[in-house]
Length: 358
Ligand SMILES: NC(=O)c1ccc[n+]([C@@H]2O[C@H](COP(=O)([O-])OP(=O)(O)OC[C@H]3O[C@@H](n4cnc5c(N)ncnc54)[C@H](O)[C@@H]3O)[C@@H](O)[C@H]2O)c1
Image (cartoon, helix red, strand yellow):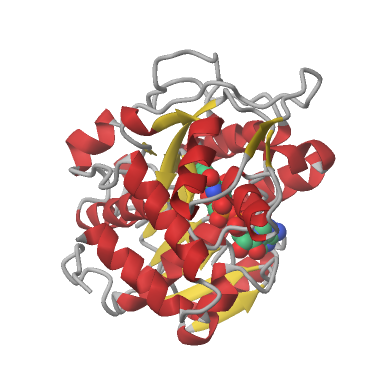
């Protein structure tokens, strides 16, 4: 595999929370291939069809730890035992609709879980970099056409979005109070950033009420695909896009710890800002069959209709940019779901990472 990070991750001790999930499994595979010692903390995978399970990445990494991030003391113990240098914090309850059913648990995991990870970072001297994953939904969404910039106010309508807005406020506070760049090298040695991606799609996601898993479940059982919010516009991107941004950011932070410890958007180019209907159509085009049905309900739970990210900062200051257009993103995503039943999924993921890089 071509190493676009110039051997930076080779031999580094990298702790990934949420490694059993959709994005975390891809990140663990990529880091493992680059020679990192990956320590994963997460709950059990949701299903036997998850990318984490099928790729067998849990057996390849240095440590596959099942633990709850709500247990702050346990987090400190794990950090003390494994002495990570870089932390990618992805573990979360990431679903908007589930957050209406479980608002307290969503806040506990997302807000207190994030605080527990920052406290574990604070207690563990080996940690130099913390990349905290929030979301595009952390911004106070005014349903505007303009993409949000990193300095826009945080907010969130539903419990998931607002919990991530609250995470951002906590991250900002911990950075000011304990990891302040002006005190770097004196009172601490930590560079802490937060990162906000758009609507991430890719192979191995089976989450409830997400458009791609909904499409695939229907296609596999030859059912019509129900589209709840056909006109909603989201910043769609392949999972490898934001992951490449998080990894590049951590590399930059390692070299210049006080220069990059802030918030970063890693969204798609404007041509990938499509409606839910467009994205589902792209998936059925790639499968060559399937039917969509508009089941929008005016009384449904509130979900954002229009949400876009401005990515100029990551482009100009990090030299990062999306590699795939919307069509390539749909092809790569469909490909995984067409092939996972018959092929070695770890190799399939590597092939997709290579295609993405190439
Ligand atoms: N998928 C997207 O479209 C998207 C977009 C923007 C941001 N994000 C963010 O990226 C991160 C990963 O999202 P994902 O789509 O991979 O989600 P996912 O649900 O597939 O994975 C979540 C991971 O967190 C772990 N986890 C959940 N609760 C935990 C707890 N209490 N203790 C320990 N581990 C716990 C799960 O075991 C799993 O490994 C989340 O922080 C999410 O908010 C996702």
